[in-house]
Length: 151
Image (cartoon, rainbow, N blue to C red; front, top):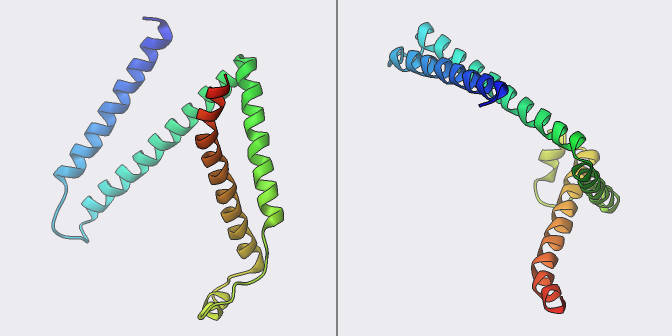
């Protein structure tokens, strides 16, 4: 096992032990009293630990993805093409979207609660993007066997 592999293994064991101690401490301090400050502090501690683990996992995933992208030129090219495609779909969806307020019974309640034309346009753009991507997915499902026949 390489030196990096040993460090990662030790780090994973430390995270597992800390997580186990926190969960066991929470389970020991559970009480029927909702206002128990000890139980509340253990719940808060476990929630903060979950946030820390999520941040570590997300950071590791982003760093690994960036490292892979910058170390492999083919992966970088594919990533840039994918981002450009998604940007194109987002742009087309935004240009097709309408900022017009929908007309239905009870819309005034939503307008009074802060519904703006920009929010309506963004929701409309999200719907158009969903429709475009769904159409592309269905076309690829239908056309994949057809293209195999001609090969």
